[in-house]
Image 1: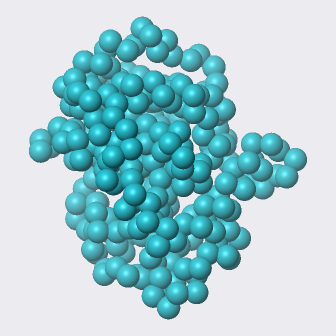
Image 2: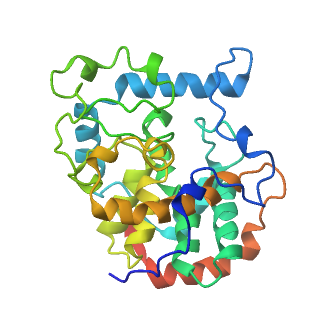
Length: 290
């Protein structure tokens, strides 16, 4: 698999980027403060509480056994992208528009600053298409939201960490409740069982269908919701050299994923589709197994 040129970026600066294209102050993104009178904040809090109660090692293994047979349906990548026009992410505190708009916003933000990296732009377009899980029966708490490893103690920066895991059965497990849990130090994120959701599913779909996207793009897609790692520094004790090498790329992707979100100035999907179809034909052609 080809390897892209390393970005000329300082990782420390990416932890709190201040992109010019953000439509509101950066500090207003990812606001998870509790406010029972705020409809969206309360919706988000309830979703995470259900996720953190039910996302166990056994649950993740069961969902992987079911979905990674890739026998649910067949569709081209563009057909899957189009299905996002009917999906609203209930875990997102920042916007309340169909997810297809977010995909094109992310891709166009990347295209503006990385016009020579078609693979990067395509990763932006499709990074959330794994949310198609919900359209085929998965609850939103097992589809959307931030991700985290199961089988070890939860990192301190996980959203609602102090209140939302109290009823999770793994909290009482003698191994899963420890820092390293069922893993070894430096084992690498590829050997870690992540919470089930759209990141992991989309990554597995791409691998199964033999995409030619580079590793940098696959890391972006697989770990873009792993905020406790890429934005807070949790779980570094599980990382290997490849994870650390890929981290700047995940961080670079994150600023477009997060700060291009807006309910205004929505992209013209019809006008942009021919350009992205060419990228799909290059990296993920044909009818795919999902």
